[in-house]
Every structure is written in structure tokens, then in C-alpha cells.
Amino acid sequence: MKATNYGWLLLLTSLLMTSVSAKNVMIQTDKLLVEDPLTAETWDTHWTPLVGTWKWEGDSIKGIEILEQKHHAGAGRIEPMTSGVLELEFRMDDSRQLQFGYDYYTEEKKDHMMRAVIEPDGLSVRAGKGWAKETKMKYVGTKIPMTFEPGKWYHGKIEFHKDHLIVHIDDQMMFYGVALISQEAPKNRITLTARGTASFRNVKLYSGKPKANWDKTEKALAKKFPTAKPKA
Image (cartoon, rainbow, N blue to C red; front, top):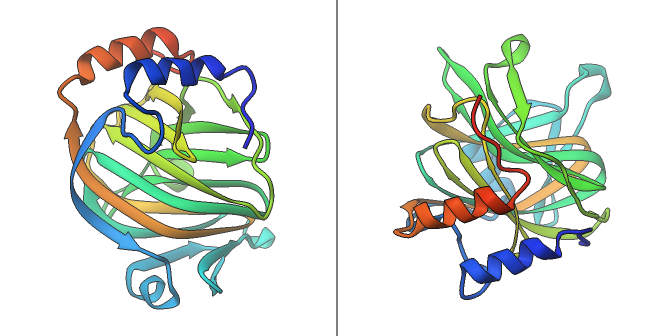
């Protein structure tokens, strides 16, 4: 992984925390809700593929886009959540894009919510609501230039609280943003997507709440990160 012109992000983070590596910036976790290595057994038990083909290969689940469906491969696991931390490992196999994040999903109501978007040349974030033709999603801030190599595993982590989102890649905080479309609605579904083919393993979800010093940290991040924008 390489970052371009974002050394100051790491400097800021080091000022905000004792150590950048493996530290949450916003959320103090309190309970492990999901610990799923994504084996064939846990996949069949807990996950629901909606689009594309999903299959277990070796030590991970591979999502394979079916071009005739004209939609990325997508799958989800139901797990109610409010504020917390979602983390996993991902690999771009033959993929032009993969996403991981969370939604709200019932038979009566479905909402896309927040997604970390991984492409070969960078990281971005989308947030919104609605489903299918009713989907309304906006990019949060700007794309972070990075290099994601095909065939290499990366560790991704999202800290989330209401409209706020922080993304870490390989234990480095790379993104902070505030959604333009409110995210204060319930969240209950971990989501994975793949354009082309991409693999995932070792999903964890923690509940938690903002740290005691989050107000001060938030103000510092809002000043320093170009990805942080006020809600419309």
C-alpha cells in the first residue's frame, strides 16, 4: 500500500493518539458482536448472497460478478448495530472495485448506508439511503490516492457513529468524513461487494461508543482532513 501526499495525515494522527497502529480514534469498543473467519460453514449459516456468485476458496470467501446481471456481486450478514467498529481482510483478485460497510435491511425497508470503496488507485467512501432504483448515495469528501495490489491481502477497519466514519487500512487511519445524507437510522447488515472478483476473510464487528475525548478529536479532524465536510 502506498499513499501519495498524505504523510501529514499520519502526523496528525500521531498527535491525536499515543500510537497510530491498531488504535481506534473515535470508538471505545465494549462487546464483540461478530467474529467470523468466513469459512464455508459460517458463510452458509450467517450470510445471504443477493447478486453474483460467492464461493469458499481455501481460507476465504470469493465474490464473483456476473456481467449479465449488470450489478456488482453483493452479499450481507444481518447483525444489529449502532455505533462500533467493523473490520475485515480483503483482497483484490481480478477486481476493479470492492466495497465493505453496512446497510439496513428488512423485508419492509432497505437502505444502503456507508461503504468503504476500494479501487486499484485509491480509497473513497459513499453514504446514502434507499435501495435498487431508489438508491441515493453521495461520495463523502474526496478520494484518497493509494495503491492496492491484486492478490495482496489488506486489513480494513471502519469506525462508525451516526454520520461520522473513520477508515483505517493496515492499521493506519486514512480517512475521516461526515455523511451528507443522514446515517442516524438503524444499521443491521454487514455488506460485501465485488466488481470482477475479490476475496474477504476474518470479519469482526464490535459495539461501542464515542471516546470521552471525541469532541476535541472531532474538531481537530474536521480542520485537518479535506474529506470532512458539513452535512447539507
